[in-house]
Length: 631
Ligand code: 7RM
Image (cartoon, rainbow, N blue to C red; front, side, top):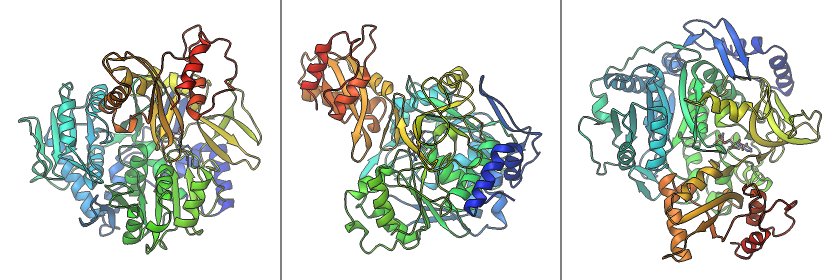
């Protein structure tokens, strides 16, 4: 029997228990799963190395808790509803039994191609059920999946394949995204030119468009599964065996491979899914994220299917064929819980209420947001026009590294407040610290958000580089996990996330390192140096503003800017393309050569004075020149 919070008093009670007796609390949650062997210790940890183990010595397979578990009780119930990009193409439903069979069959296909426990498999696929099937098939046989968002460039894909030394890549011929058709197999082919670890590529036929298949390396999905058994014994995994790697951007260098493990991730994603969204049997749940991001992992695939829910996967984009598409889908499938990003809400808000006309949204019970701070205006629009004032909004704060939702209202139970993630979920112990690491206690305080006690789905390491994990998350404030976010605790003890306090920017809910974008810009042969900052953007939340020093010989400003955008698209992907590029004669540097980003941030926001202490600036004249050429 798991823990289902049903009242505010119940929340307070469970929260207190989770802090005072975490072992008993989490043991009670974990007991509701199928384990091959129970754990001997609930949690063993230190935040110095760091070393975190949950459900020590426990043995399990996560897919048995998603599929086998429901085979007889819910075999005929819909597990996945797939809504294709083109509304004229019919939706597809897979029951729990069908999903079980397709996962097992594909697991056998991967085994037949030589994949074994511990091997890394890259998933670079459209948002079709096969992406979820691929993830679960990996988990079935103990292979470690690493899903790469299919909008990343060949170069970014190759970096990830190389970092985890993947043996196999799963992809499709083409990806339908709104009015565009992206040739994903061709992107894989280009990436693999520098990925010697990859032995096999399995290609889903999605569009039927032309692809080149490399003999001996590439095979079709439908051929790979032909004749495979629809039963595949689940590989028994240790609770701390790796489940997946997911790459995410930080403030320095290349993206890091965040590692999640089997037991804790399973326990936490199901627990948070059921409680936050108050999912009830028979409900239709829809999260609009892509499986390439952590939200797709935890709250399209793992959390919902662990809970025996019906989860909807949407292949397309919010504005295709028009800005009413989300609401058409809610209406068509009578969606009960709807979970999206503030950037999508703001984008749709810009179209007004006309796209809502004639759409039946009365099935909706709970609305969710994730990925970035939501502004109050968007919160109210969502609340009034989508939820018609009747649906609680769960503003869920969490990260790739946290694996699951950390702070959020529990739908209908914790009173909401616009733009507030409200309170921590049971088991989560947030602390606010000042820049010296002193804990700020009491209400009405603001500072850096840290977590002082482990939770089951937290990051275990960064793949292949444990020191980087320690350095990034556990060194700035010793003894605590540092989130990189700023936060305020108001007079009611409610939490409001203020955004990143490091050099990470959040563009349309996509996390990016400013250094990562700068490195891409610097690849252009004419670029000498660059500095990137995020600036407030009405729809994207933050836009990318690049200040660039370049050798203009043989170029006009216009064609150089265009070339820089193309360079960034090629190196990272279209999501990292700068919104504004300003060619500058110099950058505001200190005598020790550090760029004073604070000044650039202000200029990008349109503030042209009040830069604070500029006494360490090497050349104050540069600032005036940048202001004069501001975009
Ligand atoms: C789930 C996800 C993590 C960063 C995080 C925050 C920001 C996420 C919220 C939010 C304000 C929220 N993972 N963030 N959720 N900020 N309110 N509800 O997005 O790894 O891609 O990004 O996103 O800055 O640190 S992520």
